[in-house]
Image (cartoon, rainbow, N blue to C red; front, side):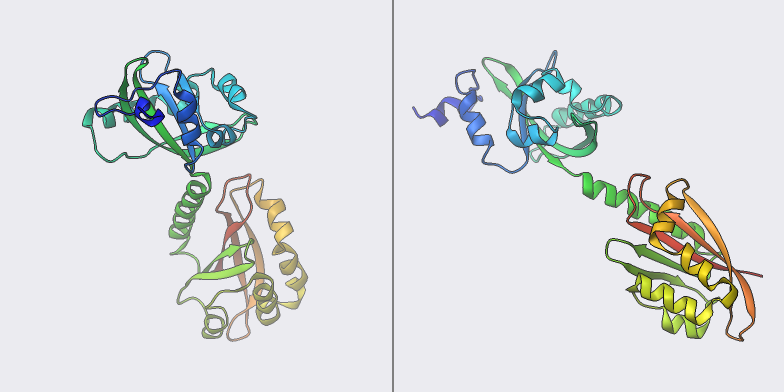
Length: 278
């Protein structure tokens, strides 16, 4: 009988302390985190691969087991553990043939909060009883991006009826992207600013075309990325009043509102909205 046959049979997963090293070798060949833990009691972790160890910011398996107390109970953050356990129990009772993701947050050894998806399946073993074999994938960047997109949609929805023009500014790509240009925007402005532009070029051209000379420098100062960063870090949104010329070259007061899309620790995207004050 081969080493592989000692682990898998038709009826049971013959996992033992003796063949755990073979399972460890196999788990290093698959992408993402992988671990095995007991389905009852303390939820003891029997094994974790190097990708999972790295995900938690640990140096090695021993470091990871010390961080988690060798228990799955200490892998999700405290606020997410009960929900994760309920979802695991539901999926186990339903005996679905295709694993479904369970989402929860973890906290690394360095204190960083990260989001993961957990795909697990319960299996019976002779030595350990019921166990879970689990694949874990880091979804932090996707989760943050989805949260930011939802927040962007909420901001724009709230501003849409009152503001003449709304732009999404991405400081990573240096783009200023028009999201909404309603009837309150002049034909000249609609033509000039109806497509994605380099942010600094767009701001400079807007100032040259519309901002009154007395407030020209002030407008350019308030729209510098470093100035926006300075102000937005302490507020969810803020408003900068300035005066511009309309189509008839008549000065009119405008409120420029800048809203943060991302959380307070990030600064890549904002929503910039303009409203004429009658």
